[in-house]
Length: 189
Image (cartoon, rainbow, N blue to C red; front, top):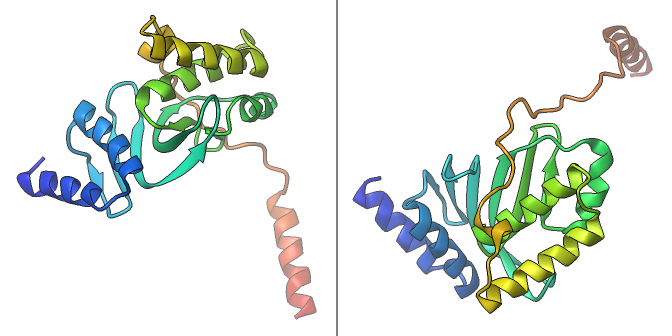
């Protein structure tokens, strides 16, 4: 990255609220300058285990497992079966499934918390934990981090990267159905 880009990222976050500036600085410290920078967000592609990491000026209050802000989103390629999406929503509202594009993301204060959330999301998808068990594990690991104890779910992703995760879904309307609807619409005009 050029000096101009470096200055730009520093200048951008200097105008952000303290909460989101602090979170963005953690990502800058870990991965260097972003590939994309706007007044509202910084984006890194292909850093660490992530497909994409975004630090945003906008942040959201999140009270699970304790009050904090969500300003950093970490994205991976991951296929979530439709029947597991509700369980993920029950587990953590900051875990987001992008079924069509085949992405799973977590939005929290930092990448460590995002790894924790995504590891537990994987446990839910594979049936190793229920949503409630995952919530309990998250709270325990969160406290262990504060206690200075080992936090293996925060340290790294515990599952291999996935490929071919997009889900285009199943077509319900034929070309004939669409053409007939178009013709009826034109007749009514």
